[in-house]
Image (cartoon, rainbow, N blue to C red; front, side, top):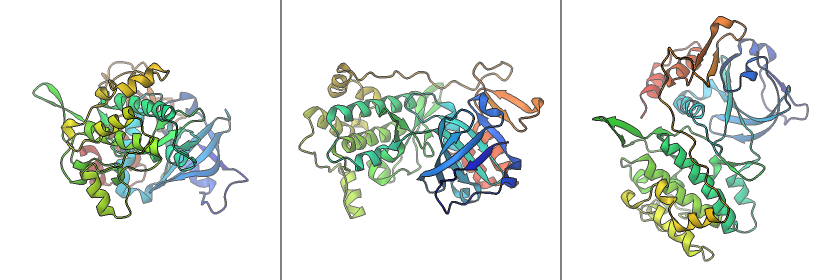
Length: 375
């Protein structure tokens, strides 16, 4: 059973369930098998809030390690259940040093708890507190890490679709950790024996970072819209402000459609050239991450000490169920009963959906179908 205690010095007014409500606790997934025993966490202050989640700093009482505890109330996420499942599935599948690590996921009949890597701040807060724009070399170092992460995802067949400073966390050593994969999507399809990029139709993401084709409601390719978002993020890194900012939302839309942004006087010619290339209105003229790596400004950054972390591996196909996986993830319905422990390589979206939905005692067929069929 998962045990959670309140820090005596915690913020007031945060509702906490009675201890009795933890009696139905079950471990859903755990990357770290040491956590499948009786983990105990001490909850501290709230460090973030989302549309349907609260994130709190937590300490594991056994190891004294610090984690970020993302707490979701099942009753409030019915309309966003697909995003939650998609984020869990994706984070379980990827392995990259610049992606925020998901350690474990727990659930009760009423809540889902995601135990994640703890980071000290996010890029948005960091830039907001700067007295002047970030030095170009530091901005380039962070952008190279972000580019490496997106390259890895695209090689794995995943588009993030919501790249923005709020979703880029920063560690104590000022390295990035990309998070929030609730809008990510598979970008490849097999047709006539060939693997091709498929068109996507869901219009999502934060408006200020969306590509023109999404703003216009047109079909799009995930790689190209991520490339646009990379351009916006590079501008923000260098200028500490948005390229298409305006008090009037319609003017913001018009500026995005025409890629109407104002270069800052301190931008170097190399950085400005790359931004203009990524912020091409025509998706076909926009570079892929692989092409961005060849840009002179990026290569110059690598040469002065910013080393690209090569994409570690593509996501593998589901393994043969008759074979024993090498690096398995442990699923436990009743951790105390050995026969109920199943070893698999990567849970399918269907298996995750069934466990989380069934744990509520309700059948949500509409949501289930949305999750299983979502492109």
